[in-house]
Image 1 (spheres, rainbow, N blue to C red):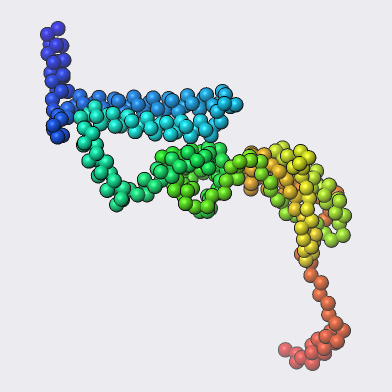
Image 2 (cartoon, rainbow, N blue to C red; image 1 turned 45 degrees about the vertical axis):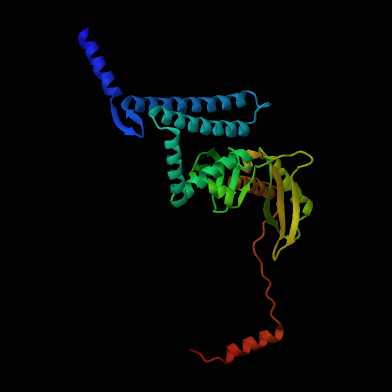
Length: 305
């Protein structure tokens, strides 16, 4: 029993033994371990709070929207982590005056080399507060990235393309660049599918084929205000040019390439079933009689090789 007491006393002395002195405060292993445990506890609590808020939004969609819950949970998590780090530093022995000096050093570091990281952090906070970007939105960036927003983190926003490729985009690009948010306010979207038919085809027959193709696709809105339409948009060189104009729900709007291909597939079936010809490019060549005679004469007078 005395051996165990001796070991515990030695361990207590080791933990409490100062490693170095910071100002007038002795920094020991015990202080450092307490600070680390406090950071881990605050990090776990912040993560638990964020997930609990998201689950609450899922259970009560009338009171909390998913986007609001995500933004509130993420901002609350950042605040809790900041509070935990400051409290852990206080526990470790760093006084407020020391933290002020560290903050000044960080300010100098931000001014020289961390401005990009700080700009992305501030941009992430702005995105979460002004709700211009939400998880689940389908975006098209000026850089060419197109996909669905999966996560808005401290430094980056994770965008998942339709090929399941995750692209990490700096948050500042969403604030400083052009962003096309296809599902910002209305989750439904109108798309235009161009196609053509041969001259002489009855327009009403083409309209019937386009509407029938649209109605056969799940996700196409067929309400009276947003019913599928077929527009005659131009007289081409060898065809009548039409557009099938349809409103689609978010699953189809978030996959424009696949939706375009699906509509064309159904449209070709309907055109073929009605015997509507999809024309090839045609050119009419006219040769005047005088030009033809001159051409034949030049061939007869040409020397034989």
